[in-house]
Image (cartoon, rainbow, N blue to C red; front, top):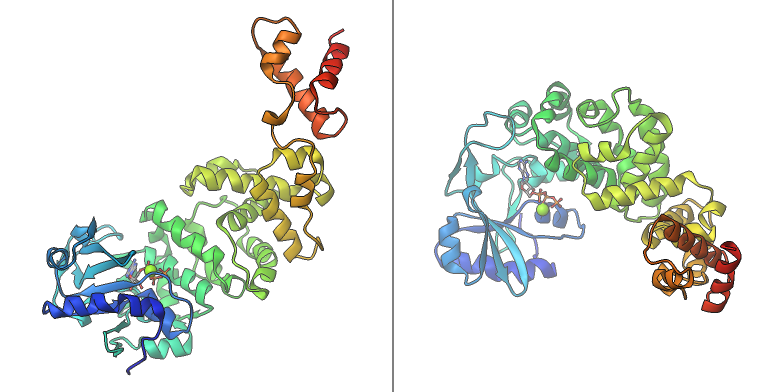
Length: 409
Ligand code: ATP
Ligand code: MG
């Protein structure tokens, strides 16, 4: 099959294939970009596979970055873009269910495709648009099927993360998982515990954010994978999935992307409704970043409040604007709110931050004839701040001074 490479990203990367070939090696577009292009989806980053070794690739291009030479990958910078170029390889023995112990470079594409996870990810295109499909990937794209390359049990024993990747692609593409592939996952699901949490988190977050989550979320249950992920021990997975489906359905219906904080914030909210749990500890188990943890907890806190409570001046003042807008978006999409209010209400607040108060700590100390700060000063400043935010006290030095004098009589 020959296809027309009329996607601008492919066009821009085409000279890289040509340049590698002009040095006597083979080079192909591979992986996600090929899959997504054939599905007529937007493509993001372009991966290239080549018969040239990393050293040989580095000799061809003036600007390269070493990222994983031992795995055969170099990044080539070309016209302001980065491309991952990986040497054809077969993976050596896997003794620990995760990464191969050794990587052997090979000189042909077909052998390289044997180490890829799913047939739809094992497609390649050359510079003429010729498609190479050694494992029935095109047929599976047409059938909307996720099927392991070769023997699924062997593939999941080699790298257990692939099981989680299967459900994440199901959620992203709305595909079904081939029955033999699913049987293998059910059997080998416990192996997921061998995988580094950082890799799990990436795939699981993509699963939650998938455009087809609500129709494919059942794969988390039927695959048994949930049992080996950091959830509360007494988790009722069916209930959790129903709750998340309700949350995410309108996003899918309206083709709106879900952010990391939206999916994790809602997950924390539902877990918190049912289980006693320490959110920070849970997020640490998932190896979440501090930023996503913090923001997801704020989202959860806001979701526990009524809309009227959220709109209280002190809450608008205190909570991160970004998360306030996110909960607003959530309620708008769900139809619980009909017009956006948050930005306007925040702009109407008498002050946006403590810096805008017309009385600072130093001035207050002078006023009270104190020679150093302390808890009382902090508390008083906090009270003044709250009075101003609630429009009960005007934000000018004179009025604040009067307020302080009355308070400290
Ligand atoms: P995305 O659109 O999310 O980037 P992708 O298919 O490009 O999807 P990547 O994780 O970027 O996924 O991997 C690129 C390619 O490398 C895959 O398409 C697949 O061929 C191969 N691959 C990645 N991870 C694995 C793995 N754990 N086992 C086997 N092959 C893998
Ligand atoms: Mg990719």
